[in-house]
Image (cartoon, rainbow, N blue to C red; front, side, top):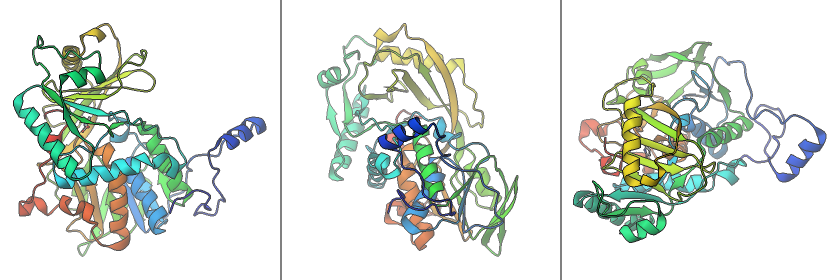
Length: 429
Ligand code: PYC
């Protein structure tokens, strides 16, 4: 079910649909647009408390309300919604993973993203322009072939292409054999692309709010109450909340939040940096990734180039950007596309990645009854948001673990059932 045209769950009447007609009406009347989501006093109890107001937390809230009718839900965030990993990633979407579990999961997410603008009545600006992972040596070419075969078997459009087709798709790419790391081929994945991360977060927030979910920004969780092996609620900077279900949808601080409930997670947190240039005329039609050169680059609809690299090689909660990163990423991207040498970088930033031993997430129940985790996304979190939210909502509503996430349980680390997804990382870590 989707939320459009429904009464908002808190009795505030119908939520305005965004449309050309509504745009004209607002313009002529001069009325303010209604707030996309509202401020509420904190209730003392909810059916579900979701910690983290990024894409995962808000998607979970939205699917709880829209698919299962569970609306007595609070999403709490210590800052503002989308201000953590959701606002810091490079918004690349793809499903060309290596393991059958990973391919099925991320493909479901891609499918939900494809239909998200119409489902949420909010333009999330998904630009499905194709995604290309370059191979500069025999072993990466072998991994690309492996991924292409796993993808094809599961119905995901991926294939290995050669330098000629790469040059045709990305004319500024240096595909000659005179470079330090000549390009031998690439894994080409046409359904991949980029999206506007703030639009995704705001779209989910607006739709969840319209269904009665309460979004509480600047509400920091300071403790999680557990008694008799069962979660009881949370303590926050705005007071206590009782709840039989608490979902940890945080990124960057996931292991610290879990530790508040006495749950140990095998996560190490690393910073990941990115940068953006001034806008220029559109010339880069595909997302380009090179694991060997530790770089990925795409061009936004505004014309800026967005670059990223691998995670910083040390564990830290620092979100400072560094000159070393910029020097390295600029040098590497110029090996791929020497003609962009005079473009100026406008901004750089960092986010936090919760890395697990197998580069797959931890999603599902924990030894504490009612305390659920959707964490450990490493560098894959934003693309996973819709499928993770949908699956966690189903788990909360039905108390059954959906097949799509069964392999990503916390117990796998003790049982030795790892889901090795390092080979599908955008860049080497
Ligand atoms: O996995 O596509 C990816 C990715 C891009 C940037 C960081 N991770």
